Image (cartoon, rainbow, N blue to C red):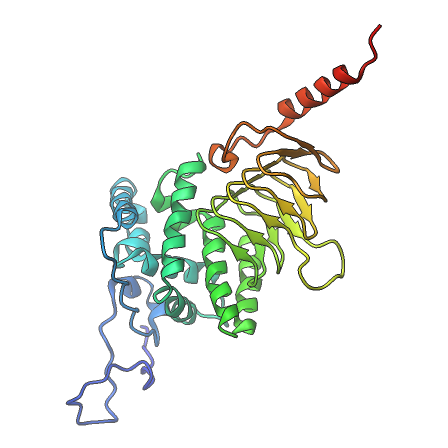
Length: 328
């Protein structure tokens, strides 16, 4: 039988008519905590859900999908209830999911939930970004079957949201905690994003495995990245030393972009490329080292997710070779 340790004064609910200051009041555990009782030991009350001016269609969809999945797979019903259906908003559900994925014996899920909630519930930019990100996963990743599956299972999505929290903590001066979260995310998800890196919204980290984003990197809105992407420096230089990726860019699998260079808005970096120089907007860069092909047809290749540049690249090379051949 589990014995819940008394809540500290910080976590104990206060009542104006509480005559006995030494009395310990244990709040009733929510259904989610009853399903995972070990996580409830000393757990603070959940932070209230943020108040929105209008409806929240993404959260409504997540809940509806979770209900349907619970009916289809009864063995997952407790998991789906604890992770989604027991919560009042997307923020609470996401915090619960990622905290339980990142917890270890010395960094408890309840501690992580407290840290994450204190950031997410009071940051409207993060609240908006996590919705735009889940929409990006649903729209652009054919393996993402639903909003619910992104929230529950997509480690690229999880890593991205924890980065947003770590980034906020970094700018609050809590750099050691931010770096601890970066380390834990790298260990669990295989995604290494420095807390100081600036990342826009509507981002897709497809698969996520092996993505590395350096301290001074900037990633614009609506960018899509495949696995194995590196936005790195070129050596031991300090200061502003990492790439800047424009809005709507697409970076293919295992592409490496090094140095303080600019990837233009709507550009496409082909899979496996090594990019060492600026890439103009709406261009393709492919090869090692990368060569640039101008005149990309897609305005936002990150939305079409066409990341195989082989045909376009060799057509470009063939046309240039033909034009340069001497007549006769």
